[in-house]
Image 1 (cartoon, rainbow, N blue to C red):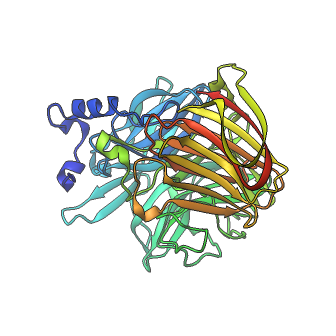
Image 2 (cartoon, one colour):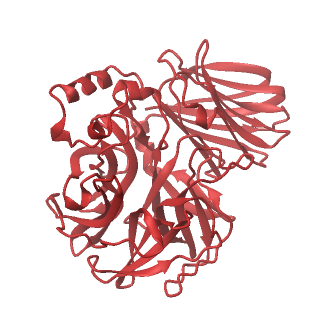
Length: 491
């Protein structure tokens, strides 16, 4: 049963007696709880926030509504890790309910300054007519891990020409100056990103819009993130309201990027190439990046989408985050690869390996099965029309990853993956790939799959909800033959 607005905008201390215990009982009986992905202790998780490195830890917060699986009163929930792999639940990082975040602590970012971690976020408020009034707020974490909100907003007004859809500050430092981008909607209901400048993170000057070649591209740009990689500027954002075009933009909302010359911070002009999607799967949104101490640019995304229902909703929880991914540029594309630290989940084990040539057949292999694992599969000498892998396969269920050699497309089909998902996103995703050798690097968990194709040239991120009996891995070649080499590690 859907919550009322009043129920959705309760703080955790306003829970009914036994309400949280009931959620915890539902969750403890859920077979779709993840083994190694960040997931909410109860309720709903969405955007990753405040991704940063401070005092020897990677810190990663996420949007959290603890009392249900609908979008309601949002907290920042705090996790941390020394290695990007093993995450520790710290607890509530930012609690909403004050004057300037009365209806939620919305998304934002973090940056270290003078030995403290500054967390800049959007405070969501609503007036008596339910009109939104956003404020850009600041909280500061000290060396002990204690987080204190700054009393007043650091940006208290929406600039002229923009609507109340004005949120998700992402901050970085250039020289001695801090800059921040914020996702915005113009009064004509088109999306854009605006730029601010500050010398101290407390007093901000509005500089204006980032000038792109996308003047009318969706109705809102959420979660902007600007960085420079390999001498080029990269703007990541999540536009809403993009129409489907063939194999592109098939999800309800998109996440993607522009690559170009470094952003001119004086003129705000950004000369760039075409918008490209970050992920070709079904469930990926609102990514955020950070720079690690060794200089890598690392991304984490929300493995979910707004305004869709998921099978775990009835089990008291919803959504998770992706594994961390290292970014690089290759031939005009943003490449995503699992961070090297993920090998720690192998536990030093050798893994299981196989080599086989398949000819017009589907075959399973001893010890190639499981619920949570890493799988590397290389397919060579392909003259078959279609080759691929059936994942989490059983008597009636399977998630099919295949390459159609004639169409030169990678295809992910989750139409028989288990419990049904929302119809709005469909069940098949495709992307063009022209390659003589196929490399599929798969991270499978209880209710998700992340697939890195040909060293991160393409990525498919998807939630799937198979029964616990569906554990087989099957390889296939149809309309000819192909050579498969595969390695698997259990997690």
